[in-house]
Amino acid sequence: MTKTFIQMASLLMASCFSLSVMAKLPAPSDEAKAKAAEAAAKTAHGDKIAAFQLCKSREKVAAHYYKTAKASGKQTTAPVATPACVDPGPYVATAPGAPAVAAAPAAPSKPGAPAAPAAAPAKKS
Image 1 (cartoon, helix red, strand yellow):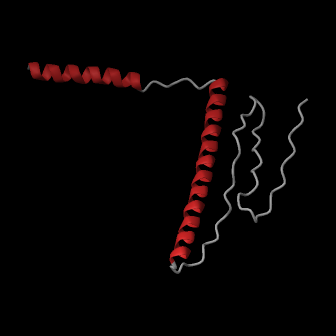
Image 2 (cartoon, rainbow, N blue to C red):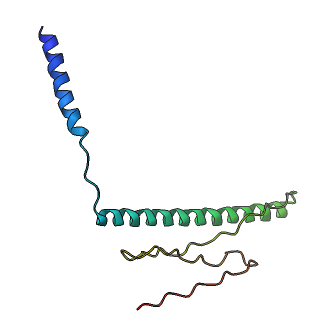
Image 3 (cartoon, rainbow, N blue to C red):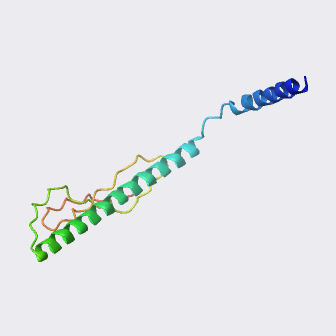
């Protein structure tokens, strides 16, 4: 009898706590939404920086491999053509309420590649 009572009491308490967990949170404010969008933009830019650094390190490793293979007389295959590493540039925060403007990518890192024209900075009113 006592064991059944303890089990029933435990079940009752668990159901009371589970109902409070299922409560609905209020909708985020405009400020919270803007903060979340800014955090997402920073994260996306960080991902672009990481991809650029990875690309540069791959190029460095490949150059070292071909240099040492040539010096030791090993035969290598021709390098695979890959797109140039594009530096995303510094992070530019957008003003609240202003439309997001993507920064123009920097010139390609390969010396023989043509440079992309730089966009003119916007005039402030």
